[in-house]
Length: 431
Image (tube, rainbow, N blue to C red; front, side, top):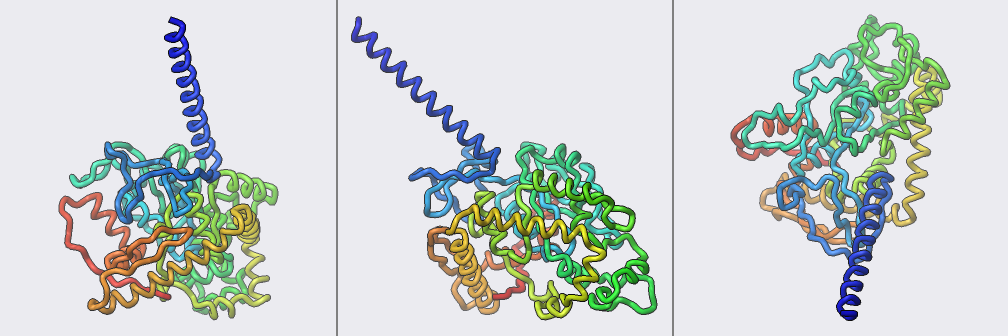
């Protein structure tokens, strides 16, 4: 009888130990999810995830969030698949928009699109967001797509940040991110891509960014539309500006910066794109192929052009009418580098590895899309920061798609009943 009691006592103690261990694991994961900190665990055995395949559990529910294995270091991190991207025209050259859209598309997540077409000529990028403006899973008519929940996983549409409304629209664990760019360079890029000269009423048209930068106050007085040309990043991020898009109150601006720093998981910087993307990869628990991109050769002013525009006089002139944007940019530029420093010395080695992978893939794709007798795939060797993987010719086209192409693919996915043959469109590659 005593031996039997001792056996039951041992079982009871074992059960208590197991329950305590399970409680610790749950607490660990909750802390990981809430704090955004990546924790490391040794030798966890999980199945390797394959490229271009949705990540599902056995019952078909997407892993969101999930604990997954990344890289060869066998570490654990929390996978984030719900993301809200707020962007200003010209701030990212559509690179991050395409990265996020491709990520959601390949993982079979729901990426919302506008329900109705908008007239974007006057105020593109600064709409007050309303939930009725965007498609939800229940609005999908294609019989090929079935979504079990009314969840928007990826949002990457022109909209002004509104914390109150967006909290109701998107999942509680959604990660808010944005990308900033040196204000004068953002203006130059948007001037070219959006033809800003059309927004000024004067016989002496501002035919180049230089003409505007010579005398910004004059050209601001000649505007005929509400299209933003000053403090545009601050405007889209919901900063308090007056009717002329200038700073309303200095303290209110500082308070808005503090609130933005609290609300957003990441604020990336275009001038340090590679570092920003690797930081995004680590924070979101993504793989190296999730952040890869191609740069269209015709989408931006050349570096030489930007250098000619960035004279001391032009910068001084532009700062006068973009003081809020410069405050925001300088603050989050410093914040980015503080976060990079906290990642440790191996971060910069991972950035170099990312650049090397990008270069190998771009070089292969440049050959593959022009020469169908070349190899159908190239092998990217495994490193400390990425596993070995094959990159195929078809993936070259997928990774080279531009914003308009992704929009068309999403409409086809949501509203057509038949799959069309795979359409080839050559990406514009730059090695």
